[in-house]
Image 1: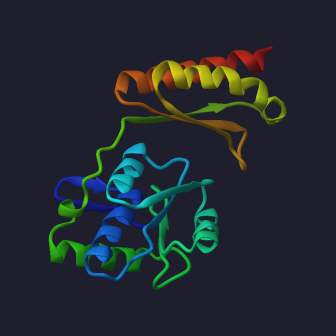
Image 2: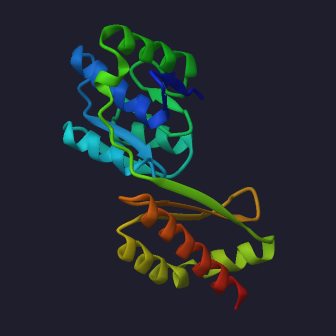
Length: 200
């Protein structure tokens, strides 16, 4: 994995993939027009990509799913906010040193912030720590929660990602909306809805 700190701003993996895409396109070294992200990628990344004429495709969390989607769609660039960056032109897996080298090349060419016109949406995340029994109960009744969670999304104009952990007895929640107040409102309502449902 790799993260970058440039000009007072922390660049996550999604920003790096977008910057590298624009840099390579400018040099006529990338014509794929497809970027693979995940369900956790900020909506601002997707909007910036679409505005620039790139297709932004989301997949499940995990670099292996990003790699699979890249192979399936023929995309040459993909990654995760957590710092996995896959540059298909050179590698079929994440390579932190390669991503850092590409970002350095973009910095030397014009400054990375010249390429980075992403406006991130406020995002918040949190976990509900529970038991293995309650987690199994949640998984068995996910559809029952779906309608109420959709109401929360609509009420706050939010993107809401709720997913049970595959390794721990917890439920991960991420909310994203146009303002920080709507973001925290969405995540708070989602937590309360799930907790109430699990206690029944």
